[in-house]
Image (cartoon, rainbow, N blue to C red; front, side, top):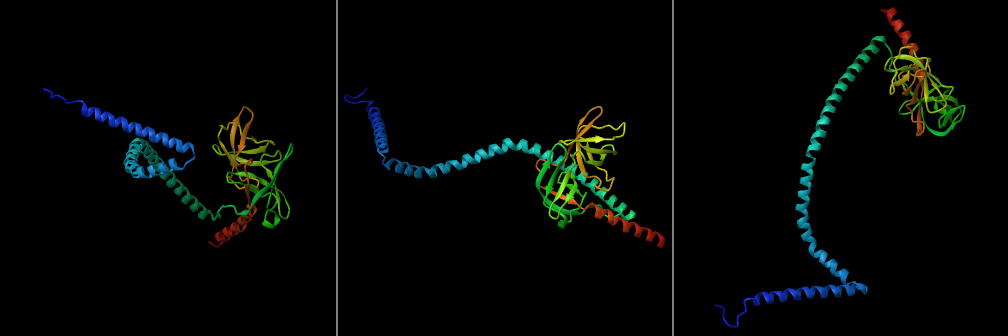
Length: 294
């Protein structure tokens, strides 16, 4: 039985009044801050700064476990990718070790043959490294000027290469500069080897960006992507320098793109191949003398 004068809802009513009062207070405070902000007062920004400083430790406290959780989820999500990448790297590592062993074996065999034949090393000395200072060209010639000349040891007909392969040969020299005839010039003829077959041919310039593979023996199978290198015949270019790659094969014509970057070339190396050829003569005499002494 409820006593007279008692109000069971009195507590709830008082709580509701407090909530309404708090809401009205916040609304009033927001209006005051808006008025101050509109008037240009610094009070709102100062209060925001203080509020940020107050809640910063709380944000840091909760940010650390959230960040740790995110990192853990990323690790779990990337575990499969890492496993696949690891397996791929293991496979590549095995293949590289196999190639390294094969290369070391070939190097040892090559050194043994050189010692048996008394043949000197075939590393071609560099006459000069030069900057390209001018590119010429037209309907009848393709060449460029380099900043190295006679004083630097540059001579006529010396091979000129970049990091990717043969660029051309020295056409003329002055004291400080030299003009290089590009392999794409119509006057350029270079003895070459078709690498996959070992067939001897001639690379002819066409006065455009391509070369033609001429005088190729009948029956040689040529495919797009085949590499063509210098043969060493003629005494101007060392053997096995990359020259061009086959880009088109038709019934009567094989076209190639030079490996050298003619459009982006900044520096080239001039090779002193003649000095290497001249070094071979005394070696032959020495071998003959040793045979006679034996």
